[in-house]
Length: 280
Image (spheres, rainbow, N blue to C red):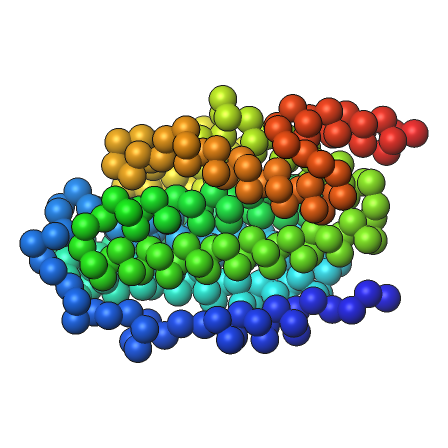
């Protein structure tokens, strides 16, 4: 029986925890450096982060067999909802006219279809890496000091979450071997394909067949196309930044699989090898 990971992660995340009241320098706010365009993007990110609520419900439902991972959700859910709350608090203080309504927040809470737990784990691991870099870029794009600090803090949180997910992926490989590796490689190939991966994040994927095509978190937003605009024309998440995401995923996968994976094609070839092994 392997050792539970949750107690270790709880302690490490507790040590890294930041206080919204004490660690965010609210007094540094400079009204002249916040545009309407930037403020509206903060609202939409706050709503997007609120979707940790249905994601947590999904994780708990699909991981009834795994109390260790389910317990970790208590910390992940807390920190993700805190991200939404930090942005809502920013708007409450400085742009109360743009605070999301309870209806707008509740609109992104809907049921996700059941899916293989390990593939979902890998999807969210990649999503955390992507969000780490999205928020780093957002911190650079914004000009107002307080929101720049908030995005930097949130980016660090997302990087820690990716590391936590990786611990559970490593545990799954120890328990299920090549079958677990295949689940992770299948999603990894999808998430490192630069032709399709630019906006590839859990909140932008279809998750409820009965609601299709309005079954993504982003489709429930006040402006469903905002994410593409935010990435393409606002924070300018260009090829250089996309390369950072893909490189990080491949580096983590190399360590996890004990296999050198320098390109998405390397990962695709390895997935095919695993498919043959698992099928046999």
